[in-house]
Amino acid sequence: MSTVQEIESAIDRLSDDQVAELRAWLFDRDIARDAANGSLDTLADEALRETRA
Image 1 (cartoon, one colour):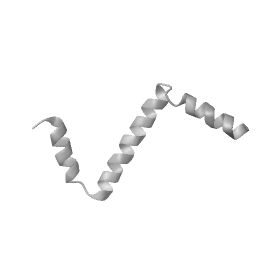
Image 2 (tube, rainbow, N blue to C red):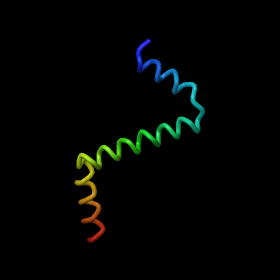
Image 3 (cartoon, helix red, strand yellow):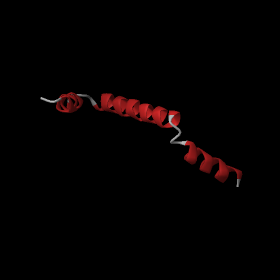
Image 4 (cartoon, one colour):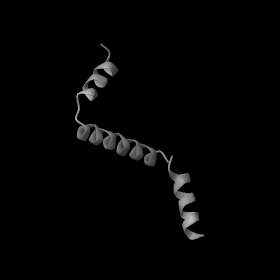
């Protein structure tokens, strides 16, 4: 069994609350990565322009 299959199997055994917690953790991790590499700069600039308009 591959690691991905093992992870999928483990996720299938999680409760709904645990899946929600995992989803939130993945989202937070992705946002932190995107913020660190500047991927969100364009979106932030656009939001600021719209707010000032």
